[in-house]
Length: 418
Image (cartoon, rainbow, N blue to C red; front, side):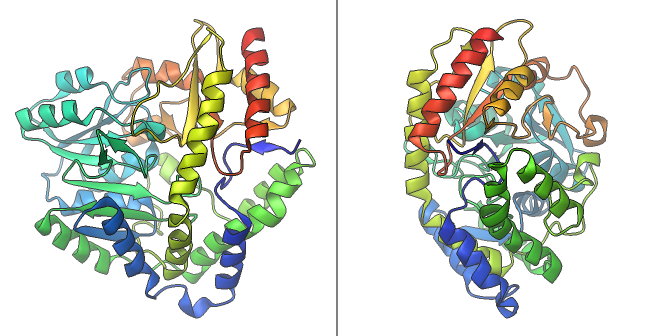
């Protein structure tokens, strides 16, 4: 049985790696080309929205939205207390203040806590559909209409998801999608901002035109990621720790980039963001976009195997909900003193590597300097507790049904022993 890796560019298939290799040797098409506009048209058509704008990352897309909304500096944006610093920093970089709201066990923001937090300084709400579970947008819309607040949707985890038959990303003033290496589809790095508001679209378009082009070096690093991951790093994981060591060396030598830059963990803005979407990455994204239905169908099938196989009363499992997509299949350990780390370490011994960066901190990655991104410990106790007890089972296209059943067997065994 080959090693199962939960993260590490899980969407890469052989054709993606070969396409990246082909593009790598054609640097004259890296920065500019028709794929960028074609990708934007694909998103607009798929979502049924008027305007889509491509950027070099999800956080660049969010920066474009926040700085195009013409909000008052110093105003509050309410955000989930369980999120990535890549969703928090763009708010801060736009001279706005993220205010963290605690979550429920479904890992989404608590509407009840939201209602209590709204005050005169609140200008909008960033709604994150965590790991593909739709937030109840009817409740959110009712709440925001009563208080005349903006909704910005964070659909980084949920491309293809719906709420009551309407696609996620079409409920608010604007929304953004991530095409990062571990998302529903991937161009290694990339993002899309969408809106139906004409004035906002004009502002985002102006922002997009003024955004910097990514450097050739940065584009090369992104193109090398699927090539080296597919042909070198993942095969090396079959030899134990070798794969992890190779990845560390490649990142140390700056041949590959990390998903989250060290500066971002301190609340600082890397020079590569915000930036325009390179044509090279748009080509990769368009290729993956064609696989969206197959990817999500596969994720749902793997999720069914987990749902049927995980029967331990010591975990909280996801509840099935129409329109849900499964970026991951999250389990929360229920016991008062039970932590995820010992179970994850035991699974690693069985060549099931499920560390994915979403553990041990309400704002991930876990080495994020919380005070530098505006979070104070104790603000969201439920999010802090859950982050210590979360095990995300992989659903991506490179997890077979046989491997999913193996994961079920060992998870059940180690949870029972925990």
